[in-house]
Length: 75
Image (spheres, rainbow, N blue to C red):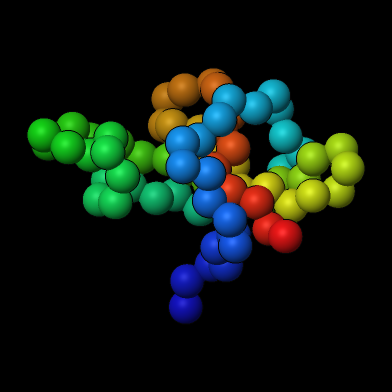
């Protein structure tokens, strides 16, 4: 069984300040987004998170990076 996915995905992930994480990461590696073209290795650690207003977010960091990005929202 796959972990839950958000109802709404952003067309392009947006930078976000450090979110309040709600659980452990799910590592997704090369295969379904543009970063995997031309044989490049890529990976992301996705988390369920929450913003200050209580909205549930789907956020990630590229492996080896420090910048968080918002990729989706639960309604």
